[in-house]
Image (cartoon, rainbow, N blue to C red; front, side, top):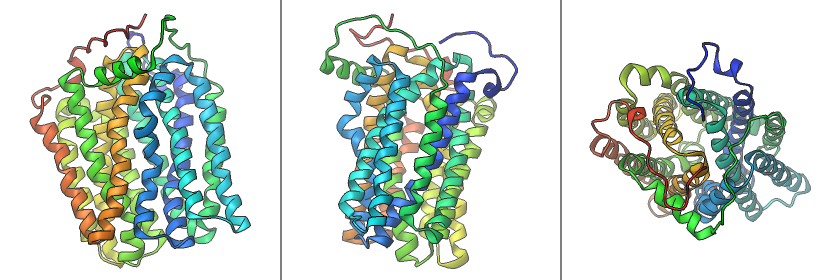
Amino acid sequence: MTDTAPPRRHLLVRNADFRSLWISGTAGVFGNAVTAVALPVVAAVELNASNFEVAALAGMVFLPWLLFGLVIGVWVDRLPRKPVILWSLAVRVAVLLTLPLAYWLGILTTVHLFAVAFAAGLTSVFFNLADTALVQQAVSKHELVEGNGLMTGSGAAADAAGRSLAGWLTTVAGASNSLLVQVGASLVSLGAVSRLKVQEVKLAKTEHRLLRDMADGMKYTFSTGPLRAILFNAALWNLGGNIAASLIVLLVLRTLGESEVWLGLLLASASAGGAVGGISAKAMSERFGSGPLWRWSMVPGVAGYASLLLMTPGWGMLVGVLGMFVMGASVAWNIVVGASFRQQVCPPGMMGRLGAASRTVSWGMLALASFAAGTLAHLFGVREAVLTGVLIACGAPLIALLGPLRRVQRLEDLEPAPEADGAQAP
């Protein structure tokens, strides 16, 4: 990572490597968005799965983070990142193709659906850790907020477009057939990544011990108050928020009796808010300070999820559409500031392990949340389960407002944390 001042031209124009990563990431998010809507619709409509199965399906995508995140993070730090991304995309294409094929042959089952969700989630662990590490090396320190803002904003816009398309496509073409969009998007990502020419940081050849390297990553993740606060904030938000998010399909299609079109619009509004939040993150950070922006961003986010409980059939769905837009923008601000801070303070040789350790905790909560959502919905009802998720999510802004970063105006002014012993970058 360099410390040179950025030129005035737009980052996408002046930096070809970042442009390739941006195209790959945006296409990937678009495909993932279609799949995020299509998979639970396949379960709920085409396979008539139970409430628990529909809610738990989302957890299968994130379960690999809990099981293998730390190990894969160590591997990503040892290997060139570009081949890791290419292979993960190729495997994802092959795995996803089995679903429409099984549907056409009339042999699609819930077990097959869960297996594909898990396998696709496993490829995402490799992809996301390698991609994050490459973004850190493709831009300068001064470009991190701008770069992460562009990635978050365009990703959220692609997510909104994908979810909107999926809501319509699952109705006219069938949910299983909609998964072909993800296959096409992954092929676009493959083409973009293949054009990467970034010179990756070459780490010194040292003796590698898997358990020690995993421990170093976890130790570094918890090494300072700011890193811990950002991690716990994300973990609580993901736990509570994803309990609510995992039940949106059931809330809309079964509890409220609405169509897949409203479902797509509701999910797309969150992504549209994320696009606005990502694009405006740099300006908001400069205007109010990255510290206050990070601390206060989750407050309207909680209110956004709470709006789901106020929805009624018909035009009453617009309450949730507006609330999810606000939630999306709030979360995008929080993510951009937090991710930029981690990338700024973390040495390249630790980035894979830091990403793995932090996401094992925070994204692992997404898996637990989905299984919890299914259990709560089965025992107490869908609305009651959503309310439980909203109450848990309230803990995220409390950590931000009362924790060690409560008085920090600019996170970028904080000193980097020292590396864990035995994990020195060259």
